[in-house]
Amino acid sequence: MSNSFVKKYIVFLLLLFVLFISYIFINNKSSQSRNINLDNKTFEAKDSGRGNIEVEVTPKILSSTQNSSFEVGINNHQVDLNYNLSKIAALKDDKGKKYSPLSWNGPEGGHHSNGILVFPPLSKDAKSVKLLLPKIGGVDRNFSWNLY
Image 1 (cartoon, rainbow, N blue to C red):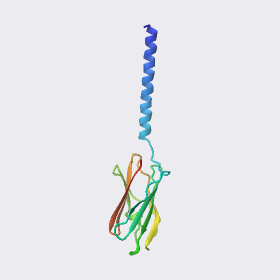
Image 2: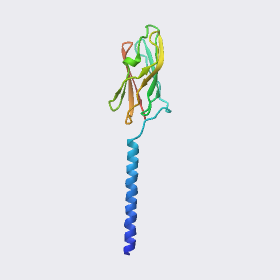
Image 3: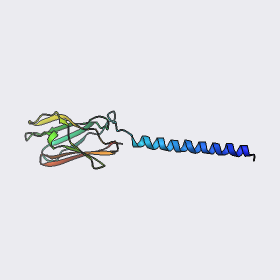
Image 4: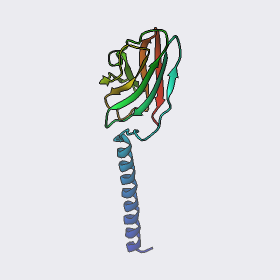
């Protein structure tokens, strides 16, 4: 083999190595800085009919770039619904981070309450969330969704 061929072969191998390392670096960086933006994804509505009160929750937006929101319906025919979800609800992700509500636009009182519960954007590394609604009709209601 000629000396020139060996040099070209070494340069070629070095170029392949640099390309491989660049690919790994770019791929790793994009996975670390990913944003959760699942506002176009449809999430399953979940309900809890324990006790005298029926609670149904549907995620509307789950995102790390904008506020996350849930449509919440609370219904019954026996007691007055006097719940301000912005004061009692919480959202937790699988990393243990807890989010407090920013707003709740549902009414207080009556037998039927429907509204939107809004939370701050989720952490970028969250893989699942759990909505906690304590003591609705004396029963803790927990609803979970996987983000991916």
